[in-house]
Image (cartoon, rainbow, N blue to C red; front, side, top):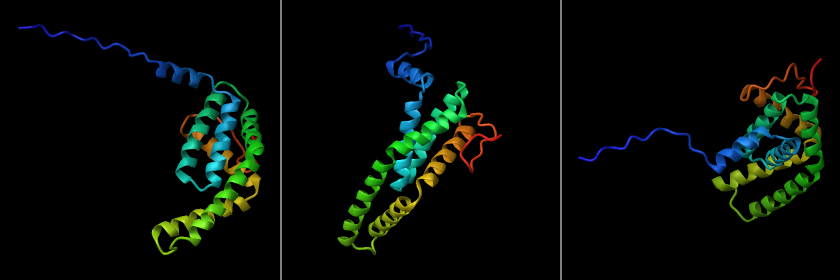
Length: 168
């Protein structure tokens, strides 16, 4: 009767695991800016689940930076500047998507579920197209810092969510 080999449990190393570890250790401001821009675009396009996922990613980046000792003002400013630099492109994309949605609405039955969903999406995009940039920025910053604190344990102190800045 053959003997059974005893396999000892050993840690498995992979390139993906190493890259994932390194990515978490080296979060930088361009990553925060990029995630903030992506969150803004998803919000303005009415992609709710995509926005939530991107806010979680942004919150994770913010929490890591704050836990590494980055000043909260630096993180807030990275979000604001990243979004400000890409706002016109996002607005152009929303305008284009509204036009496409309007075209599709004229060639579809508004009584169907698909027609109703398309109308809701167009209305959502119109809303965000007309929403001032400051309000969109405030929403992204607030959502990301709330999640950074709640999900990732970041110490945001007495952050003033109304004015999007650290409290006194």
